[in-house]
Image (cartoon, rainbow, N blue to C red):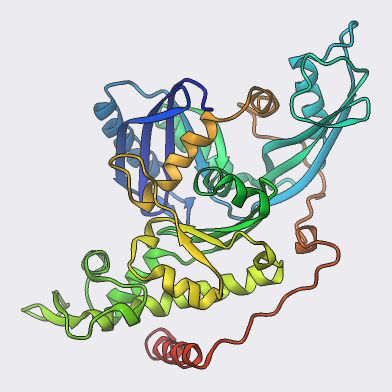
Length: 438
């Protein structure tokens, strides 16, 4: 159940910046304001020009303020999974209170003990997530406060990211006149919103196809186990259309949204649309199928690389299948194309909030939902980092070997051989890629 109050989600994406204001009352989320502005100063999910990014954030915030009729001061922001590293952590302390009753201070102290680790100078601790507490050997405890004990332990996971990514994100938010309430890893919050309880428990692959990059995350046992980031996203599709059809980027984006199909088998070769071509006085007619082949070529390339990475860690051994979201998934036929390439069950997640029923709003909504549903003990643990996303750094101890995720008795799987129709289809797509992009 969500904590009552007003929450603001700030999704700083490569193609757009979205601000969503929502009110949580008795576990019900009511969206009261939305702002959306085209991104400036970002590349592949990372801030590269702080001044431009700040201006775009301020515009999006003002839009949300006007619609919600409130002033926005605090925000929860998402951070991409670029070079994210995941590692287990644990800490142990002696209970300080003479009565041996565990309180908030003890929880903060054991969390601080779990954060004592050496890191390379270019990395910072982003967040710490408690898994369980152990009181005098009794494990499986979610909230130890109020219990009597002598020794308190905490097991959890710690997420680290490059200092540059974290610092630039914080700097943009501060210079926009905002206070950073929480900084959340995007796949972590997405998993809580887009996946059911069973999908998070038994294991599911979550794919977020954004404009600047494509991210795959493995969620298992309600934990983020593995992330993969491809620096190709929706912008690459638009650039391909622009190059092949010899049209401007804005014109290519428009035809992609209006006439584009992810699966060329669903597009019609009889349906034509006009497009402005550089060097031509009048628009040129292009058919939907040809446009779809351009789009499918790039998506096939993205999915095939993602497929190889996920199979290396045995992600498809999990029963939850694949859930996709993100702005690019609005293209018709994308579920069918992904199902063919991954040879796995795929479904699409679209938010059901009124006025926001488009996959491009999933990330911003997930930030609000994630923060509002944090438990008291999780907030206490994370408060050890609040306002100071730093850690002493000397040497690297974070381990990201894929064997951490794969069960001990599991062997790497190999991709099933595609059927003959699929082979022929992908052969033609690869030929298309070689003709235009290589």
